[in-house]
Length: 568
Image 1 (cartoon, rainbow, N blue to C red):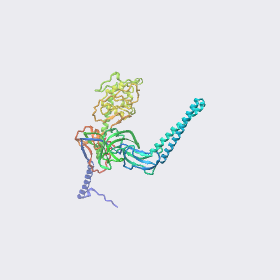
Image 2 (cartoon, rainbow, N blue to C red):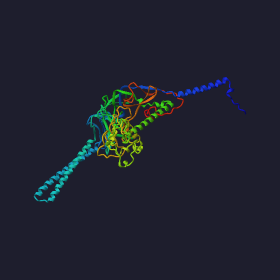
Image 3 (cartoon, helix red, strand yellow):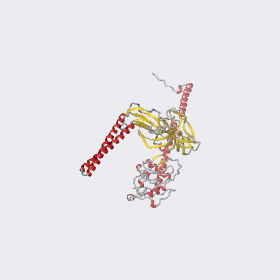
Image 4 (cartoon, rainbow, N blue to C red):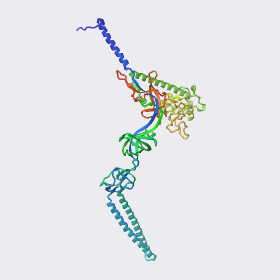
């Protein structure tokens, strides 16, 4: 079979136009899809303004009487009478119930008879002893007969005392047959019925629960250990119960217990809130949703809390995400190069053989680090000296400080710029060591050994060669810097503060993250303490419309800050 091949010259002009038109349509459609997939989403923005912020802690708790007593029985027996029921108001000393007293009344009668018998025996022995004394005085009996008479008297006296104690015990048990109220209040619960047997052995059986005065109640709320530090006595609290969902009750913190409650490895602390229940609407045992206000500001520079959680990078088109990731990587590389330069400058300022950079004071000769005997025997050229930047990562840059005295280390820090200190801290953090750093006001936090900030090490403490030992002085960097604030370094005993960011669209239409320091928050708004954003600036809080994408875009972070962590 012969196959006929088609040649472009064999087509007519009309067919050529049709084919060219189809090709042009496909080309335009492809270009349109490419550009359509790179459409930017429409951002939802909010302005930074001033307003009131009420920082609060929410929890759940249980309501109960301010003084609630469990009434029980100290004796065993059958409940013969009940004089009160649920919700019965009672007075102190009022009868609540009665246990069958037959057995205990018989015990009282038996004890009384025993007392009478022992009393008669004691009187007879007493008269016998007096008679024996007279006979002994007349020398008619021996001394042994007198002593036997005296012993019989003492024994009879002790038996009488024991019989009287048994009588008292029997009468008390008889009185215990009548259960009385120890206070004025109301019966909250009745746990026994008429004819029921109560057995008092090791545990006292509970019969009633009485609340002293339900006009004054307490709310016990469980507060997480992360929030308990904000709770103080006399703070205002509001709560609601399911029985009255439209009503809000007011209370005040009266006690913060120091006893922890651990359940499934979760540590909670109990906070007691005093509640006024004059209208008697609240009942014991109700579950309350409580809110405790811990701090407030009436005119705070605030930003919507959603702006701190929103991460717009995940909504960008694929090429925009790649461009942003590349830009972010370039910035990191640039920061690393800058760090290396600062580390080199820091090493030059501590190396006696290297000229000190301009702007840095010279260290006095008496404070320059002295090499040990082993080190002085080695060549003293720059190639043989090891800088912190050239040391292994696990030393944390501490080997070069081992031959320096504390005074020399202090002088070294006095001659370092804030940039050099920050670069050295970052390097020690990356290597697992402990660098010196600054707090919110430029003051160094205490080290893991408990040394005070900016203070010298005690004289009686042993100087260790470990790189974890730090001697510090308050940093000269400004306190209002927007750099990430670290409480201590990255080593043992220190924790880093959270780095919060918001996103804006700059004048060029590009996304930009701005680092902020936050203060109070109520869940809806968050106070901004320091930032490069003025009042009225617009920040991103979400999106109003997603771009129509021809394909799925690679995801680099969660839209609410996961993965990259608040857009970092």
